[in-house]
Image (cartoon, rainbow, N blue to C red; front, side, top):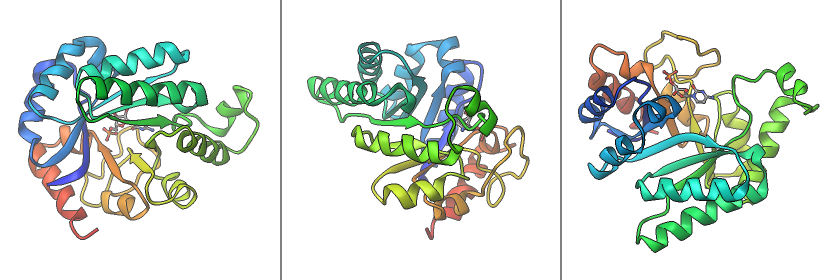
Length: 238
Ligand code: C5P
């Protein structure tokens, strides 16, 4: 069992997602629901999980005007989610609105506020793609700048690729949460799928990751629970 492992439920149906959650509960720390599953199955699927006591990371990457993001985060709190995210490039006011909505809505319902984290630069963006959007600086500098903006806005952490994690940890200190996908090799399956810059689970935690988002190495394994337990075992001494 490791609380650090968040399983990406990248499946098509509610039935598959709930079956995986039933299999993996007790071995992992939570489940990530992204825009695919959310769009297909809706908020009732999130509620079904939180009502069973599962920790849900609602990965919808809100990016809109502050009022709209605040109301979306408030709705997420109403679903009982444990972690929610926004785009840091939405700016300080937007991030503060998200943070305030999380705290205020949670207080109103007597709940623990969810962790609110931010995406800095999408890891699918290359240096060239970043330049095309009018941001002329080095990609890692932009990641660090947005991570600092995230911390200064009072958010809890960021999503970061394994390549960015050590620099963010050095710059932002021990308390800042870093959620790292792109986990391959080590105790996780080595098949890279479409991931390029990967790291093994123990290596990623040693590099500063607080949580690991793991999808296919667990959900596409013959025995998902064994796959999750093997990753958890590899993190035990860290
Ligand atoms: O199957 P795999 O382990 O590659 O799944 C990783 C999960 O993390 C997917 O849901 C993917 O969308 C997400 N993710 C990612 N890289 C990012 C941000 C999120 O792989 N930079």
